[in-house]
Image 1: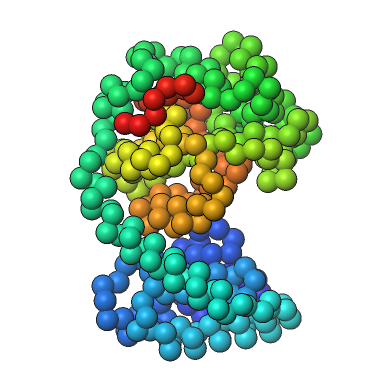
Image 2: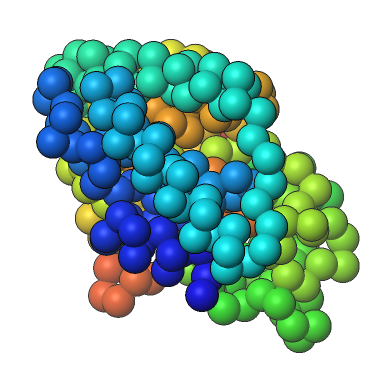
Length: 302
C-alpha cells in the first residue's frame, strides 16, 4: 500500500498538491478554538511522515495521529527517516507566521483589483488587438541561444520530441505559433524531455489561479509586482490568466509558495517544467493572447 493510500485511510479525503503533500481535515478539528480554514492542516509524506496544523489547541490529537501515521507507513515500507524535531517545529512555526500574514493581506490585496482591460492599457509595450505575433514577443523574453520547449502537453519524454526543444532563435523562424504550450524554464541542449534534470535555468515564475476571477488574480499580480518584476500576462482563452514574473531567489521560494497557495494560486506552477499557455495559439475557437508585456529594459512596476 502506498503512502498516499495509508494517509487517506487515517485522515479521510486529502487534497493532494503533489505526490508527497496535501491538505486534509485536522484530526483534532473539534478542539480548535479559532476559526477554521480549508488549508489549516497539511500532511507531508516525504521523509518522516508528518501532519501539521496551524492551530495549537489540537496538538495532542495531531501528535497521536502522527504516531499512527508513522507506524502505519513504517510497517508498510520498513523505513521511515528520522525527523529533526527542533528544525521541523521551527520551520512550521515560520510557516504558521507566514500563513497568518497572508490571511491579513488577502483583504487588502483584493481592494486593488486589476481588470484585464486595465492590464492592456497599463502595458508599457503597446499591444495590438491582433495577437497573431504575441508568441514572438514571449520568445523575446529569452536569449536567442536559450533552448525553449514549445508544444502540446504530451510532447515530451521520447527522442522524437527533440524537435520540441529548440533555441529561441530557431523558433523565431517558424511561420506561425508552433504550439499551445511553453515553459518558463530553459533546457539543456539536445533535450527531449521536460524532466527536472534537463532544466538549465529558471528565469521566470508563472503565477495563476483557477479559483480567483481575472480581476482578483490581477490584484495578486500587482501585489507580487511590488517585489518581483512582471514581464507578461497571458490570457489563456479560458477562465485564468498567467502572470510571468522574474523567478525569486531560492531562499524566498518556500515562503512565497506558501503565501500564493493561501491566496488560492496554483502551487504546481513552481515546478520548473510545468507547461503554461503560449499566446497566439488557438484554444478551441478562442485565441490565447498577451494582455500585458514589459520586455527587458522597460519599467516593471505598475
